[in-house]
Image (cartoon, rainbow, N blue to C red):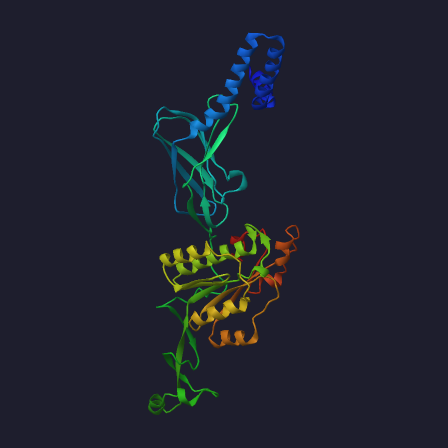
Length: 411
């Protein structure tokens, strides 16, 4: 039998709908047998009815007594494959045949959310390997597992949902590589959580002596050296400016735009994860704060273990809050040492920090580093106006929907 003939037969059987055709055939046989009194037709009627009953009841019975368990890594990063191992066990008598196992993976792309596989024969135990990809960060519940079969006749398929087969999966945001940040001076090396900045008239630690200049405070004059050298000398100090960063997310639901992976929230989370990894690798301390329906907070810390703590929070954040962004910035200011860097996000809502808060930031020598989203591009993806050269030189990272973030942060 050639392939084209097989295909025509399969299409014909599919169009026939045997689940409907068999009862219709039985009814016709019954009417003819009743009218003509032909005993053979009653036999055919019994055969057709038996076939129809077996086709409906046998698959359901075939699924009873089967237990399943799924194993997978507890966490993965966006874009990574998720290996799934399904173990089936059947303790009853006799084997089970032609079983389809269907899982549910909500973090996968739509066409991959129901990975499935076949087991031809299940005697006692069987193992099935499935795979899906994780499209977006977050916390997800996998499952439940479902079993499907049409055995033995394939006329009627039955499906059974297996209780207790749900499991939790955490998907971390996938950071992109950053080689340098505009806001961090590469020449300043963190030392015990600080970076040294030489300033005139500082008051933290001794840096050196210099000649007195008009306007210098008399309290910085080194009288002993002045008397010895017969000229006014002033002590010069260095201020220990903190090398700690605080990343402040805007989790106000009204400030968001875009959908799914192409939303400002997902871009901000990916940027935060990338900045944190880069800064921790450079020896800086990094903290995270976001005020949403709940407060997401990671105190400033160092090391790759701390990076994992930040990723754990970033995987879970949701933009479900209503608090002004300035409130989150104010919370972050209280936990950031003097001279630190605060990474801020402008969602294009024209919401600015009030003057009092700006004064507090400058008073604590906190440097704001801005990431500005082009809201119009997230609301209207097909509209992409070219950036001006002035915006590229402004020391602010400008992000639009569809941008290659690695290239944006390489400028």
